[in-house]
Each structure stands twice: as structure tokens, then as C-alpha cells.
Image (cartoon, rainbow, N blue to C red):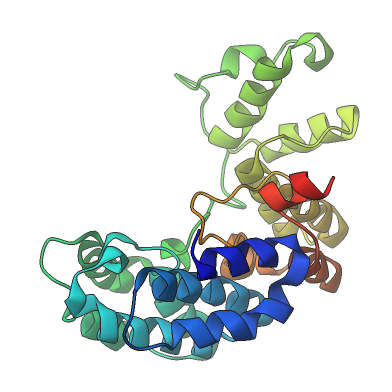
Amino acid sequence: MNKSEKIISDSRKGNFLADLPDLLEIASKKGGARGPVWEAAAAAVQVLFWTGEFIQAADLTQALIESDGPLGGELCDQSVPFRSALLAGQLYADVPAAPRLAACVERIPDGRHLRRDLEWSSQELPRQGAELLLPCHSDWGGPVRPPDGVIGAGLLDRSYHELDGKQRRLVWEALCETNDFARAHQLLTDTRAEPEQYSICLWMAGWYATHGEIEHGERMLLAAHSRWWPFAKWDALPDAPVLQPTLRLVVTDKVRDHYLTRPIGPEAQTAE
């Protein structure tokens, strides 16, 4: 575990704001091993999303790619949260993403994952817009989709209390896949059991946001916090709640404080 990963792990103990200056300091370093630099930058970008510093997150991303992209190192195998930083800069800080995407693409060797991802984003941005390209977007407010071929759909008419843990997870996944929020809300009301899956908690939160049910949406985001797990050592905290405009409607001060000050992921388990 390098220095950045140690700081990121400490951040996940609920020390995000205290550790942010150290992450930014490492992210700005020139020369030396580059792994800790881009890892610190990635984690810092995620924290900056939560503090609303979208311009700083986009600036940090562009500076990192312009300096390290030509080196062809591990940075070029990443995409998140760097793509999100450039897109969110446009959505929340009126900094056009297209010129930044183009400038970054030119600094990355052909054939690398980050270059392909940013090229695709450049192509899709005029057609889809930044919101749809950010993580965890869902068809909130959209129609219910038919259950044909949906795994778990056959369980929807069975008593939830008679199902085992795996079957209950399949029920929630089927409701999300079919976009059947009314039924999902009724299930939550009847059982008082939030879905176990992080992504489905976000789906529910977004639906509550569209209905103006702030407290219900807040509840879902608080539940999502305990269900999130990092997919890499640099992954500091989930960013979709503050990247998706719909989810931002239910990011209350209570939610923001919870995510920035409470242990999360493996560090939350250690703290128990």
C-alpha cells in the first residue's frame, strides 16, 4: 500500500475533509512514481465533488492528464472519476467539457482505455448531454417496462416474507429493471426493509426526488452509504449522489455530512 492508498484508507474512516489537502498535495507532485499521484488525484476529485468544487475537480483532472497522459502509465488505463470531472464541470460550473475532452484526448497514446473513453464521451456529449453520461443515471419518472425476460419477475407475486435472501434481492432487481417504482415503494412501506443493493437504493432515491419526497430520498441515500464498497484502493467514496442532478435534489445537509464524516466501505466494517 503506497502513501496515497494509506491516506485514502484513512479518509474512508470519515476523515475526507481533513485528508483532502494531503491528497491534493500528492496529486500536484511532479516526477517520481506516478501511481500515487493519479490515485491521490482520483480520490481528491471524488471529495471535491461532495464539497461542490467542480471547477477545481475539472482543473485537477485536465492538469493530471496533460502532464501524465503522454507517459502512458497506469493513468491511461482509468476512466473514472476523471471523465465525470470534465462532464460535471460543464453541468455545474458552466465550464464547457468539449474543449477539455479534446485537449485530454490528444495527450493520451492511441489505443489506451482512457483515450477511447474520452473520445466516446466527446462523440456522445452533443447527442446525450452531460447528465446522461454521468454515472448511475436512471429513467426516473419514466414508464414501467414489461417484465418479459426479467430475472426475478416470477417472484414479484410471491409473499416477500417467504423468500430467502437471494430471492429478495432478485425481487428488488426486477422492480428496478422494470422501473416499477410504485410497486417498489409499496414493498418498502409494507416490509420496512430497504433493498440491500447500493444501486437500487440510488434508483429509489431518484424516484423519491422526482416526487418531491425529500425525506424518503434522504433515507435511501443514507441506506446506500452502508451498502457501497470501493472497487479499487483509490476509490474514496461514491460520487453518483452528487453528480446526478436528480439525486442532488435529495442530498440534504444530513446526507452530505453523513458521507463526508462517517466510515464507509471496509473502514466502516473495521470500525464496527
